Amino acid sequence: MESLIVPLGVPVTIITIVFVILCIVAMVFSGGVKYPKVQNYTLDQQWDHQPLLFSATDIEPMALAHHVEATDVEGASASGKW
Image 1: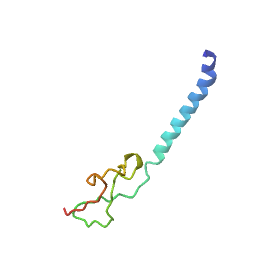
Image 2: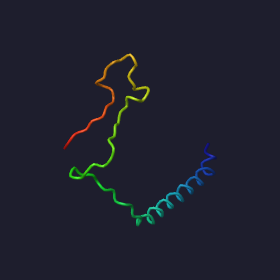
Image 3: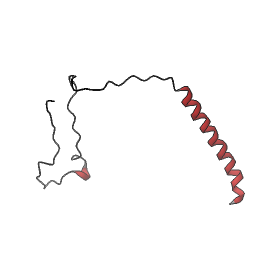
Image 4: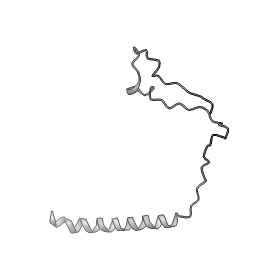
């Protein structure tokens, strides 16, 4: 095992150093990239999107058994006025 340290360790070390240098160079040159600013929603704005429902009841392992009739735990939607 000790005879493999130099033949395998040196190339792996060199490749690692090259990749670290390439990552640093990429971070330096990508510093000037401008991304569009995401507009945050506030309550004084009109909501113009469809309502969203995040429910885990349709996922098979979490879905209720067909014989269970508990309607208060099934997925539904909500709306309200702020």
